[in-house]
Image 1 (cartoon, helix red, strand yellow):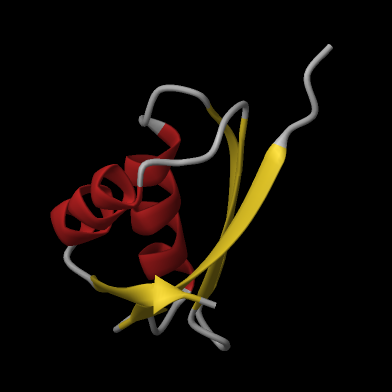
Image 2 (cartoon, rainbow, N blue to C red; image 1 turned 90 degrees about the vertical axis):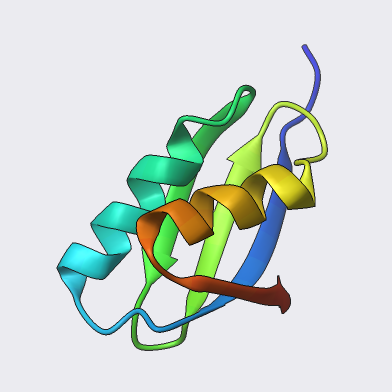
Length: 73
């Protein structure tokens, strides 16, 4: 079994649990993503996926949720 890849991103604009849910929901829809943990207080979103995530796909998902991906943490 292949090991999972964990990547942490910085997202600006998240301020509450609803924000975390919106970001998590959009990123979870990306193929290969197995879990997402968004923390509004730190602005960090930890993505666990089967392979190295596509940063542009993650950026698009964050945009779709109404927030801004500022880069990897």
